[in-house]
Each structure stands twice: as structure tokens, then as C-alpha cells.
Length: 231
Image (cartoon, rainbow, N blue to C red):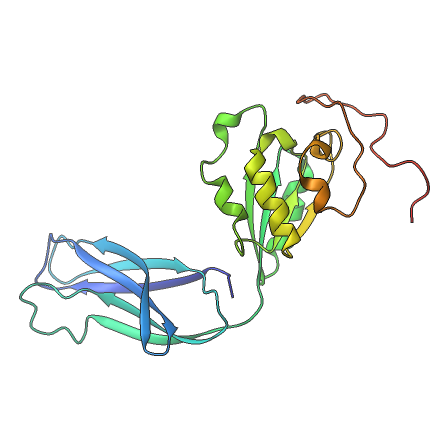
């Protein structure tokens, strides 16, 4: 569940060369109700050409569902019963979607990603987010923090100023709703990353220390820990 499902097939086109043929992937969302979850067009340059198609889709609900690959009927087509092929897929409960956000290139990110990717039940999306180069940030980053998008968020050495205030708010809300949060630490994390100045204290189980930080690759700190013994 929530892991990406790849569906592949082949379309043989006879009599409709040089014409765009719409191909759809349909998924059963309720008994007898099919929903289009993917669509693309294919074009044959000669009769009888076989064209491969591939779709990706992430089911959201466990259970057994019907899956249909369909080429839409064309004007004048006499036989349409061979335009679709159906099968059933069993969606198992489980699977973990992880968003790993890193601010600097660190060697450990390679091994963390390899370790997580080794599990078939874990899907990891990796994002480099550099506060010094806001022009490189993805325009749809806010979408990553919508409810249910990811079950776990990993923050590497990334400064709080790399995020918009609304994104940090949505991320804090996602954690408060039950998403996991891992902060790996670094020169741009925790106090030095100025997370104490954001709304994050409401979703983290530790006490923040204010820090007069700045975005820099050479930031150093005498200490980033709370005074007193660990408990």
C-alpha cells in the first residue's frame, strides 16, 4: 500500500497508423467502479506495430482490486472487445514512504539511502535543498507535506531558512498527526539551523537552544547540546 506499482503492457495497432491512440490505466476504487489513474497516447508508424506502454500508480487502500489496461475505441473500429485487458492485484497493508531532505552533500546520505532502499517495503524520495540557492528548490515542495504523502521525514544538514514558513508549519502539522521525524544533525541543523525560531518546538520532544546562526558552509559550534545530564 502506497508503494508505487508499475504496470506494463504492449499495444498492437492495426489499421490506424499515424494516429494518436489514447491508452488508459483504470483501477477499481469501489465494487464495479473503475477510475482512470493514468493516461498516455501512442502512435504507430505502420500497421501491426507493437508499442510498449508503462504506467506507475500508488494504491492507497489494502485489498484485492481490478486493474484494466485499455486502448480507447476509434471511429470506424468494428471489433473493440480486444481493446482492453484486465487482471487483479492484491494490495497489502504496509509500505513506508520516506522523504529524505539534505542540505549539503555528505557521504552518509549515500549509505542511508542504500540501507532504506534495500527494503521492498520502504520507498525513499531524496531531495537536496540548499538555503543559499533558493532558485534550485522545487516549486511543488509544499505538496510533500500534505496529509498522508509521507509517513517519515528525514532532515539532514539542512537550514530552516531553506523552507518557507508555511512549509515548516505543514511539516510540523504532519508530525503532530503521526508522521515520523528524524533529524540527523549538522552545522545547519537543530540550534545552528535556527529551528528554535520556527513553529517546530511544538512537534519536537526536546528543548531548543536559541542560536545566532547564519547560512554558511564553515559554521562551527562550541556545543549544540542542553546543559545537564541525559535522562
